[in-house]
Figure (cartoon, helix red, strand yellow):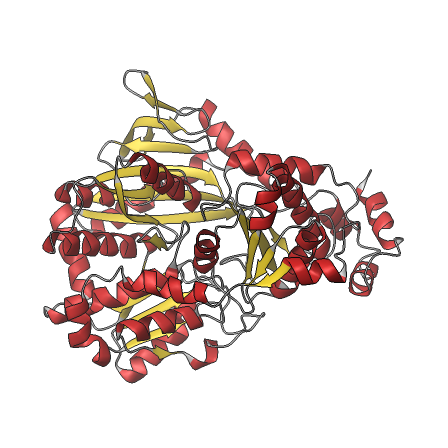
Length: 572
């Protein structure tokens, strides 16, 4: 069926709701728009699905949400009555239609005699992950598009371990979804089913979550000494982090000033261009507050509060937004330092990071005798390591992070947790304050100790229905066109993650990487630097990562410019 025929099938169907009918009527003469909306189906991958809010088979709407949930329900039913009774936890953030999508998912589950626990208010990703584990449900659903622009929403599915659903189980769910050809046909629960199977998440879950987090504190003495007088500014950027972040900071005794304009829900995220705390611009209101009250640190979380952005005062007294890599190495250094000082660092301690995250992590781990593991991009792979080690006891997980501002200490959740990251970062500020030091000074000490590393990434946007196909074609092209150098840096090895193979450039010798398959090309450079190219899993963007090791910042910036120019010559 062609896209125009699919469009006409929807608009002529009496089951289509009034809002959808009015929206689709407006585009009846716009073939390009109709093709985008109906020329494909919104892809359901290992991170669930994410798309622009609107009506059509390729959009985020109540029909695509219900269809996806019916596929999940069919999967759960194959696991038996016990799994159906254990049920699914559903959470949602502050985005447009998030609550409505959550309610729609709950109704589909109830119509299938599957228990649905629904939070009665917005809750972030980490609390959904924790709730799955706490209530021992068989799965979890999070309605969110994380840090994407306001036009987006999404649907993330979690397995019983609290991590995003495994690729194997996701494949089964996708199979069930694809069998549902009629998007407008979804089961509706009876009044009896609604009453029996749709339940509120018990309040004890929140209490247990905060209790778990307080167990992870590392510097109670420093917090007691400095917490009340600490001048910290926090912005939830209109997202779900407001209640949990302020709650945990209050519980440990840290004073925080909240940015009033960004405290409450706003589906338009009207005070920022993009609700992504990776960008300094997103923290700009917080920085203005901080300058006004003489604060030294600014925090910001994204709509689903799984990412934390941080800005601190530099040596010139100006606020500098730290990258996700910089916050990651600061937290890594702090956690390992404090565990070592307290003689609490496990002998088999392990840290996990994505392979596009800073190479500086290894030097820090080596100093403390901690094993570092690399996994593909996606926090579910960090969650998988935790799950394995809980069974084998081969290693004890102490910290995991990604360059995209995602961090997790503790095993209470199996996804990025900006709430625990906020707590630890505030505590870290107190710790350094108590010994007469700033966080920025500690960062410079880390560079002095391990050498300067400049990490950054750029994104090349793709448009249209074939965006994902076109991005993958670029990556595939790199595999068949060998690159031996990027200007001043020679390539020593090439990792092809789609084949799990690493090739030594000098000898041609190949070896297994030992990683799950993903379409990505990674160039190891001669001095420990790297360049990595991969398609984004959440947006139509090709992402290119640079990690540049050099003697100092100026040299690194010069080298980065040359490397970026060389990459542009290859990727045109």
